[in-house]
Length: 342
Image (cartoon, rainbow, N blue to C red):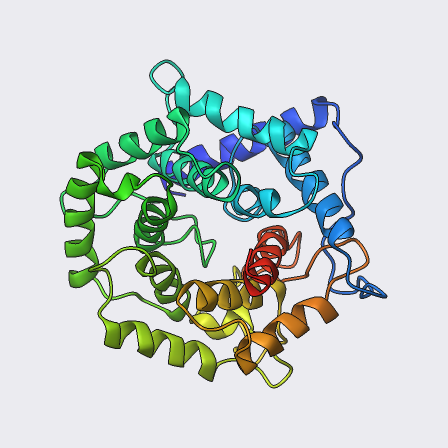
């Protein structure tokens, strides 16, 4: 096993032990399961309860920000009622504390800085509309980690679609900068970093539709990442893979291998992650809320919420925990609110 993966395995083992010794702040959510019944009716309050519970427990027990669990929560939670929940405040305080103490408690990976900047920027944009000092600090530090080619050293843990290549880290940096309030993208640090990032994207085509979708999200507010033709091509490609039931399937957004080496089925059923991401980004890219494809996607999300308040997404790696369903549930909320115009 590579040294990095050995270190990562040790960290995850330590986190698991810590989780066993740490009291749960609230009772944990039941595991993500494909057999969980659908909700009898769509419920914002059930979504809010699930997101608060699963994300608070992850943060308390793991003391980290994970792409597959609490990353998108910080974007989604301010969009729901009772936004100033104890869970939301606690996770926000955790991220601010990390951003403000990296000089003494070093980031574990460069990815920690990028995800913190991304989470705080989205949280600021969705809540106060003001750029918090901790957010600006994280964003500015992010650019100091940029590599010579304009990209970033990202986690490569063979956990697609997020933690498996450097390109995703570059899209995270782009989106964080694009959505940060108060014209952060026009700051000197951002301008210098974006110039290099544009070069990176120009020289490195996105490897799959998932990453092109992330880049489309950033390009909604940042010029020079995609040409107009490239934007329209990505929109058309997303429309092409929308399923007959109105949803999208994560395996259709890229060619991904499972941990045992088998292929994921590109014709797999629609799921919360892919549908939430597609609908939300298409709206950010300017597709109208009353567009038939958007309406069918929103209808799928409302019809496929589970009893717990979550939306299920099968893991691309193995069938142990399906943690990506946690991120997918936040994306589903973001998508539905985007359709509502919020």
